[in-house]
Length: 105
Image (cartoon, rainbow, N blue to C red; front, side, top):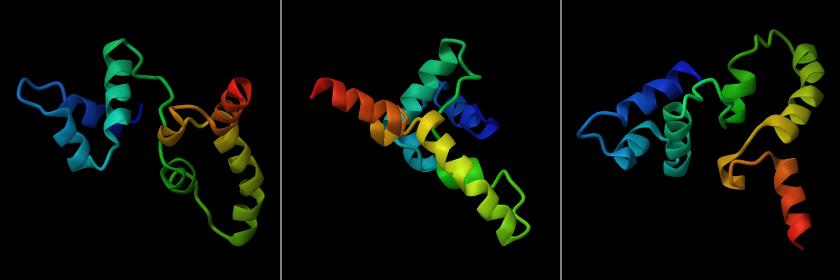
């Protein structure tokens, strides 16, 4: 988990903390915050958690020119679809979600 996610989870651990208010103040989906909290309380603070594409891929990589950006797109799309869980897909990667939907059909 990132230091920002740990900070947000830490806010929920106070005696008077309201998880829903902490989620709202920090712009985090409530179910996602509950998942982060459970992971942390179970000792999984290093687990991979869903983040936004912009925060995961754009803000962490220097992008000096268009050639660099174009060279990274295919790998980033592959990672996003194969390894990146999404809160809107029940904390599954897009590929896992599609496979689960196909299996139940």
